[in-house]
Amino acid sequence: MSQSVISILNKIKIDKSWSFSDKTRKETSYITHGYHRYPAKFIPQIVSRLAEKYTKKGDFIVDPFGGCGTTIIESKIMGRYSIAVDINPVAVLITKAKITPINPIKIEKEFEILKKKLEKYNKDIKVKVPTHERIDYWFKAEEKRRLAFIFSKIIKVKDQDVQDFFFCGFSNILKNCSIWLQKSNKPTRDFGKEPSEPIKTFLRQTKMMLRGNAELFELLSKKGYLKISSKVVCTDARTIPVKNGSVDLIVTSPPYVTSYEYADLHQLTALWLEHTKDLSDFRKRFIGTSYHSKKDLVLNSKLAEKIRSDLLIKHKKTAEEVSTYFSEMNQVFVEMKRVLKKGGKTCIVVGNTSLIGVDILNAEVFVEQLQNLGLKVVDIIKREIPSKNLPSVRDEKTGKFARITDKNKVFAYPTEYILVMEK
Ligand SMILES: C[S@@+](CC[C@H](N)C(=O)[O-])C[C@H]1O[C@@H](n2cnc3c(N)ncnc32)[C@H](O)[C@@H]1O
Image 1 (cartoon, helix red, strand yellow):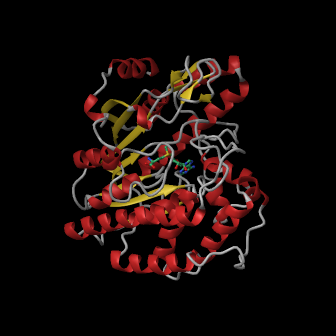
Image 2: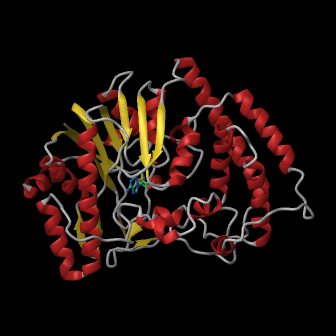
Image 3: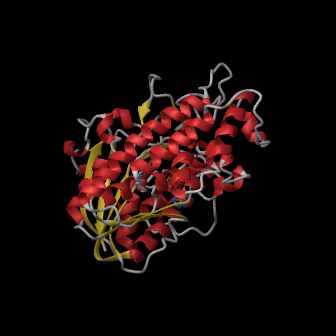
């Protein structure tokens, strides 16, 4: 079984029309897509093309690893109902802000009020600054004080949608205003960094978001889709809050095993907005993290078992992490099957990688697991990932992520698959 899945995927040729390499940043970050950076986010055009092909107006779309909300934003502007799930409260905050069109007149007014308050900042003004040691780890005193001032004004905004909108902007400026090593996906401090000035940066960020919101509001009003329901829920992908057999299409891209530590990457927002006081507990909730492993795993794939034994010879801990990942992904697939309608499709965007010299064939394993659960292959698309979207590269020998500029490295995800399967 697994051998045939490997050869099927090996034979698939790259379909250039799915790389969207001609799309400019402006096109991939139109409406609200550009509000907030997020690792491994979708190009919106992938979602809209899949939704166009496999659904019609009024259908129901779900993304169990919703991230910053790309799937449900595209669903909404196409008149499809949708729900996104993500375990990361920061992802949920961003998504909530991005899918909620606010009347531009109202938000402009709120912005002017906030701006006037922020412009009153001076060094004698009384500000209650947070005392968390992790905040002190990342922020210098003056930036911390200014951020605390912005925070104290946003928290007073009464309208929840407006408050979320401002907090989303606040969240996106935190890295720039801290000593977090710029462009690094690993939490590293840069003591030589000159952090951005928080108030100016926040106002600039919010102005960009005001334009995105106005664009979204206008588009949805024109199409008559302002009331199309799209929801985001902070929960585990194994507990999608929808009825059995109710979903027409799932579009998702799962986390990769030990690739991004989302909990680490979003710790600044999680700390400021008090999503967590304890980072180690926060980390354990994520699939693909290196912070937990379990026993009695059901891999539901011969290939996954082979990968586990190949890894075991080299490094027991990595073997455990990868097995835990495949087993947890199988649990997500069981849940996805539960919510899909008969004939409903699931589109999983996934790349393969390599760890300590062993190929981690995520796509092949997923196809095998889904087939073993009774789903059928409808289509498998192989797409190139334009380099501007590459998350990072891996060192060939160690399997660790390295800087993209380093020579002698191999690209971790030069291509990826879109697995289209049917219940
Ligand atoms: C590759 S990202 C998805 C990005 C998304 N396609 C977008 O456009 O933003 C994977 C997501 O899975 C989420 N995740 C990890 N473990 C999860 C779990 N147990 N349940 C739900 N979501 C989880 C992460 O927080 C992350 O947002």
